[in-house]
Length: 433
Image (cartoon, rainbow, N blue to C red; front, top):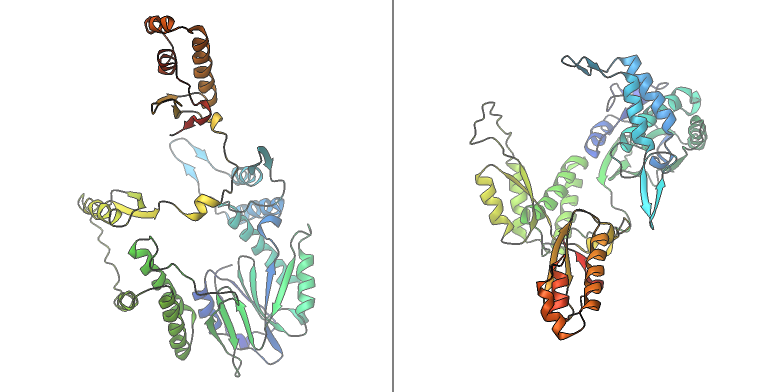
């Protein structure tokens, strides 16, 4: 299915106007064509935990069927004669979707069903499955409860449907997936309005709809504070995003004025001075299309990008120098509360670290031993400790320690223990790189 739909809403009653939407702007454009009859209401259906309930075997069947039917595969290498078949694609996709591993408290687990949260392949697989599912659901729906409008964003579906048929359609949708893993919940309009994505769809007296920006009841208008340690362009980006959403989502001018007042009040609460808002508004009003220069030379050609930790006053200067050499820069926080407090993955045992640079301090002085190893850090640390303790037990007298420098030891740690009779902080040893 392609995004959006074509046709006049009033002219087609028995058929469903269906489409795939990609963002709120497209939703706003599509709903401008809709007029809702008195017996119909706005309704939304949502799939419960789509990613972790998507049946992989059905996804693979759908992919193979579409590849064979639509003949979309064009992968062929003339030099090697290699040709990628639909079976190859399905086999590769199956391997990716069914080999999801993670560690928890030192144990390795494998996901046995559905797609993994956070995987870049999961949205693609879920979308492929939902497209086939919705086509089947609409085609087999009873005529008296078939929706007149069906717009889907991943697992969220917006519908115009007869007010008495919502439960019947929900029961039908929940029976389409034979695996029983896909279940729909629904939400009907309340007082003539329905939230969908980040919009609030409001039904007007004449049956047309208008869109507002939707804010949850728990919304606090807390955005990136102007005093926070972030580069200026990121703070201006917050303003630009809010203004772009106002212009692309809100459909009526008087509502845009009200939305702009809300945005400005929220920005003032977050400490943004008036000049930042004016700067962004001027930029949005003076946007000019970029000229595409087909001829590029060494002076204008981009030489790549580097990511820099942000330090106020320093990173900006480095960025300007990089720009003079046609090197783009991106800035990231050097440290965050999330990085300090949240650990989504199990911590790795440092003793199992390989290819490491390590530090072993002395407890009796300020000296530390810095070494490197290609093996496990724990193995190398134990070797240091064994030799040092062995030699410290052997050399017990002052005379013996004076003679010991002439002996050849395996590391400077042993030399230090024997010569100074110091104690090494084995428990404080750490990997530093």
